[in-house]
Image 1 (tube, helix red, strand yellow):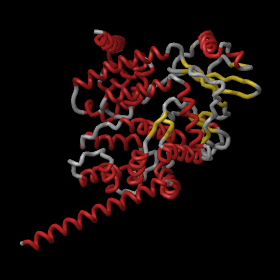
Image 2 (cartoon, helix red, strand yellow; image 1 turned 180 degrees about the vertical axis):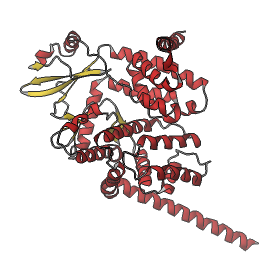
Image 3 (cartoon, helix red, strand yellow; image 1 turned 120 degrees about the horizontal axis):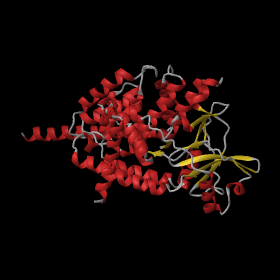
Image 4 (cartoon, helix red, strand yellow; image 1 turned 180 degrees about the horizontal axis):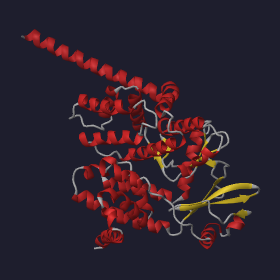
Length: 444
């Protein structure tokens, strides 16, 4: 009965929006309608909508574009609420913890908001969790589970393949980490350690002695938002190169990457270094996944569609019951249209759309661990287009593969070993076959 009322609440909100503006449920406006519904329902629905925006094969390209506009912005909570949070965590008011605490926030989202503070002539960025956010997210997740289970149990085909219950469980785990700011601090520290020797990026330091589960205190870095660099004399090519390099280093070298790299979370300093903030959503890929995904990228850049197909079959992304030559040709049909074009004529989102269409043609299940890399790549594409739409992102990616992946990475050595082992296996199979034929002929 409780689940019924939660589902009823979801449909009542949809009905209310339809009554207020009937045209929003026309086919061309369904994405906008979902955008409004998710925004009203709360943070978990916003995050779910952002994940869904990576799957045009499930919800359609128009709805995908509409959901990408989902904004995670809310009005700030009051200074009195901030005082309560500080008293609960420090037994002190903000101006007693810091020499100076700036009451005007510099960013307010659905889970937390950020303020500037000063102590011993050092400036800090102070991230504060929203009051009662944990309770709200638990309610959101319960409602999401009811709605998605309804779709999963009553609709077959692509909805089944999307594994909605698994997606919600994945989302729940990530949100539980987001509402404990010590997890975010740990992620930021891990990225800082991984990237400390990379000259193109800087991760602010976390001050653990000042941080709590509801309050994260980090280094203040003087930089400008990446969407404002057009107003400066900074070198856009250098900035874009640094952005692509740090993303590739995080995702394909280290397997731990910032998965929410929208313009609000990317800053640039006077040396064109990329400054990242907000580490609530972190993607991870194990060694196997990292190897397979990087090899697929390398295959497209080299027009090596046999490699791409073989990787998909080796990784288990495509069932062995399908013909590998047909899959190779399907990959060729995608790659020849896309690879080598500049950003003006290329959409990585379209590449994903085409690749995801293959998941339907070859009945491939959603890989939950790849949802965040899909989302992060689409975000990076959007930022890159904003900086310089004439820049060839494929050349930058290819340069990274040549200079970092193939020459420095142990993965490349592993790749050679893997294909040598496969060659040996095929050779042994061939020898065994000829030996069996020789024995059979000898008997006859």
